[in-house]
Image (cartoon, rainbow, N blue to C red; front, side, top):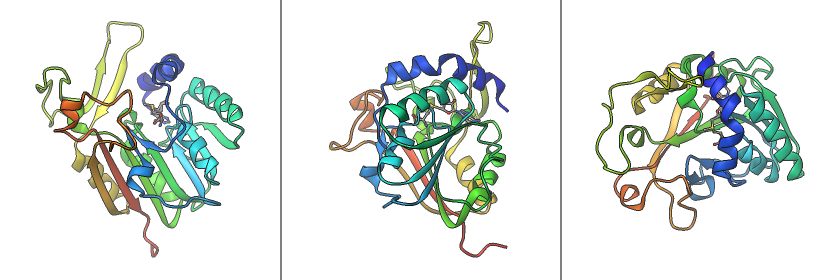
Length: 244
Ligand SMILES: C[S@@+](CC[C@H](N)C(=O)[O-])C[C@H]1O[C@@H](n2cnc3c(N)ncnc32)[C@H](O)[C@@H]1O
């Protein structure tokens, strides 16, 4: 498990929630599901959100009639999510659990697995995607997205590169502090290939910015950067109907 990442989120999750004021909406980074329409109707469907944070997306799924479970490895995030779900009067099952080990979720039980802005903190993507594959029903969809990897290598003010796109792997900042921050940088093909190696077929991959109707959000990059670089990347993958 990514212990540095878990400790960071445990400690700072609530402050991040206070700062971002994430809306109750299904968002892939700063692009909304209503903009891209990848999922369709969810009424009565079982949705699992992994790395749910404050569960704003889970709550939005529940409002649309889905039966939702949210998973996050930080207890502080789960506590926040529980309060928020109660405030919005919706039922969401919330579990403190690492998304690379979905043991409490039964095999082939979910219609949709969703995740936003979370895989960058996950060290073992292969374990995670294979767990997602296990819990999905046949023909179930796995949709996820977040900040486009290009934005991670760009200095948003000067628009110069702050590292090579190929400098991937675990990056830890603030090792000299009592609260280091870690993330795992990956290329687009890293995500694509782990999906394929886990048995998924990929229906769609989108690289885009929020449209005028749905965005941008407060955490989108400046407009001149948005005009030239995609802010979010989204994958829609599927567990094949016929599996061994
Ligand atoms: C940037 S927040 C995104 C939260 C939410 N998905 C959203 O879009 O608002 C990342 C979340 O992923 C969670 N997370 C990171 N790695 C995780 C892991 N291995 N297992 C479960 N949760 C994880 C963090 O605790 C944090 O709540």
